[in-house]
Structures are given as structure tokens and as C-alpha cells.
Length: 113
Length: 111
Image (cartoon, rainbow over all chains, first blue to last red; front, side, top):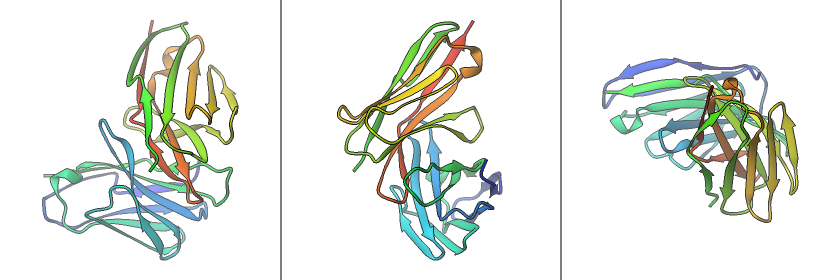
């Protein structure tokens, strides 16, 4: 398994507060991704990164920002958390190249009350 | 925009029986993936299908890809309880492996 560590694993926060989730990888993979998983929706891409300081939006990026200052770390920030952002968040990484696959972290369960 | 649909959403199976999960996608997808997720756990990669006619097998699971029909199938042979999980298919386009997931098929294998 790719060494992907997400922190925290669980978090409860109040509406309107900022929240940052961290993803750390030890595999030197070029690409990193943040997905959210909600019942009935599968997983949806929030943001992704194709290199240090290179990021782009995914399908559901509103209300989220990301940063990648080092190859191994990808941060997801909710500037002002809302109840609709209650979800399970997964980080994933993949190598460059065609015959590749994404490896997923253990997930962070975020509850906004 | 790539859209991925799976069916059925829920499948209750008897041990020893054979079943198929279907994954349809809307536009050209460079690759098709199958993942397994146990409750409260991460996603585990099962198969990566790269080209038309690709078939891959691992134990009781076999995945295939028909790019002309925009269809992938996950066939389960002689189901056992350990296969109970949620199975996702996902497609991607471009070089960044941005995945578009189906909503998942929750598989329950009963005695």
C-alpha cells in the first residue's frame, strides 16, 4: 500500500469555523487528490494537485481550498465550515503515467454542527 | 463530462451463486477502475482496465471492459461471505487520473 496518512481521522467542528485536513504521503507520487464521500453520490473530486504548488479544481470545489508546498503534503481547508460539508474525506495519490492507479488514505470523518 | 452509472445499487446474494455488477459510462474514458470498500474503511484497488476487450481476474472476481458499448462488468463467481463490501467503478480522462465514480454497489452475501 502507498504510505498515505490523513489527519485528523475524526473531527467535529462548529459552523463557521475554519478547518484544515492534512494528507501526507511517503511514496513520492506526483498527483494528489481530495475526494468527499456522501451516501448516494459515491466519491466526488474536490481538488487535485499535479505537482508542488500546482493545483486545480474538481467537481465540488466550492467552499474548499488546497495547498501543496511539498511533494509529500496536500492540505484541504474549509475556510468557513457549513453543515453541508459534513462528510468523509479521502486523500488519494497516484504516479504519473498511463498504467497507474490511485491509492487512498484511511479517510477523515468530519462533522459540522 | 464523464458520468458513471452502476447497477444494481444493492445486491443480496446467496453463497455459491454467480452475479454481475454493471458499470456504464457516458463518454470516452481512458481507463476504468474497480475498487472495493469495507464499511468504515478505505478504498482498495481491484482492477485497472486499459483497453477494449480487457479482462482481468483475481480469485472469484473477474472484470471486463467493452469501450464500444461503454460498459464494464464485475462478475462474481461462487460468492462467499468475505466478498460482502461496496464495489465502485470509476473512469478517468486525461493524464491526471481524476476519477469519476459510480455511486457504488453494496454487495451482501448470505449463507
